[in-house]
Length: 230
Length: 230
Image (cartoon, chains in turn orange, purple):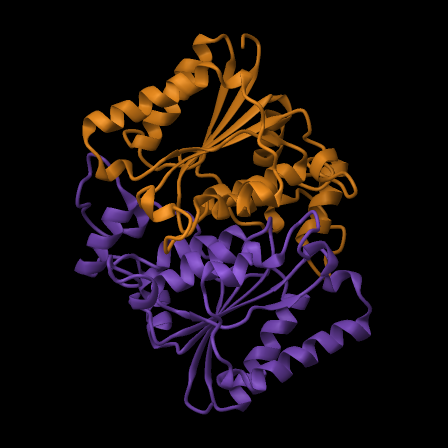
């Protein structure tokens, strides 16, 4: 929808990868709709995934015993977060929709994207107990996890060795996004693009563009254990 | 047990933290038993979590389109992984038991530890389809996830907003360790150490030392969906 703002947090090393194509399709399709699209290209930015003292500019709240969560909360209040985090928080603040685009690494997101979650979603900015889950500080935003897998769809079916793909989504969708109040759209999963034909890969890209056309009409999922484990 | 080798992969910024104490207790107790204990102190090592081209020394297999998994598999075969990865793989190869010690960040491990998983557990070294799960290449090893939480035990009970803590363990225990053939011991979870008394924290450390005394007699869990979701 025209005027809506989208942040794509993107984690792939190779612009010519299938993930790169999915990202490009999203930028093109959403721009065509009149959305304003920003991309955080984590590898290109050499985004820092490690949660360290460097995330706080100036003096620590307690330099005798470094407590990352406490220091980050204090630094956020005082405007003393490192510049890269202030930049990312601005993008999140402005966005109506966050799209996370990545290849599944070990039943989860790549470390560089986990680092984005660990460092950007600071207490006071994204949540602040009891403002979590439905009253999280990022409510009124939407998020979607769009990713590729190495394994086929059959490998991620209920009863298979790797279990239902939804089991994997719990920490990401519920534990992170829902915790911050963000409403979660159905994930977009491209299974095993490396092991299908060029034609099939093109179909996957077309299907992604197609989904994005009606994205703003979608209802968020009901982000409770039932969605994941029943 | 005397002679056994243990690798502790440890992710906390502060030596005086409760996680630091848990790590120290483990080193002391296991050394007392005659085990040989190695610690990978990820923050102290400034361990690189990002999966990039720098992980491969010399020429790429396909420099036109960088595919991390493919390049790492080839580099492993040719002995062309970066030195930090060769070092970590040696430690894993020698270990009978891997202990992962960390504070829970966003329903998972901190990015620096996820980066260890992403970069160290290379195909050909840790798994090599169809050698995964029970026939993974690291079979005959044990692993344990030992971590602290911000939330209390009640917050991670079945039916609570944050759901059963076991939901969180699926990607880590099953998706990573079991996938590589490693047998998983019951996790060791210290709930909300920051919000309990000093006396209670000391009890937690004693309980950890106590558990380690009989660790080698423990049976691994039955790492199937039933353990996690029933």
